[in-house]
Image 1: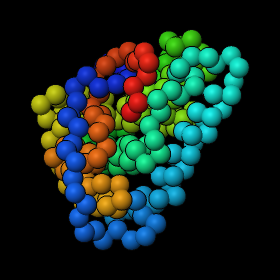
Image 2 (image 1 turned 60 degrees about the vertical axis):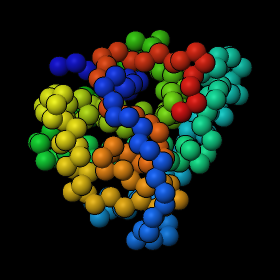
Image 3 (image 1 turned 30 degrees about the vertical axis):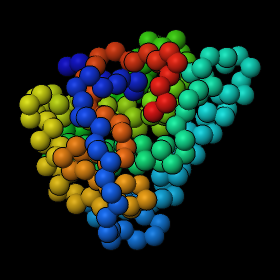
Length: 219
């Protein structure tokens, strides 16, 4: 089994979904999306965005961190970052539903092992955190474990179902969750399994952590 790491990026991917016009929604105030009957609150979403911003600001203040990666160069604007983060939060729930239905699990030990390996491959924990923060979708240090879990779930699902069947399995889970998104963040595209405005392909199949682009692309 090929190990997916926290910094892996798309090699087999879904094309970015087209821009969708806002439509009527039953999502109530304070809710970013409803997935499988459970709310993703705007405060939870904003918490992820704030974590990224705080980490970017801390990195920028470090005198030794002169690289564009450490400074969070070309970081996405806040509205776009909100959509990117919400998109991934929803996709994680789709992975969790697919994994549950297929009897797939990811353990804390697996996450710890991948984090340790990724850190070693990238020159230590601090460097790994800088690289995570410099990705197209910035990942704050305290979001790395969740991102590793995302990658491990996706990798196991892809391995179990195969390259031809794992996307339909994700689509089935997406439909079963009856996803409803606050129009503020765009519309959910069930075919692409992504927010219509998210512009973030997400299916990954790479065994080595990605190195940051030069300069890092802005989401």
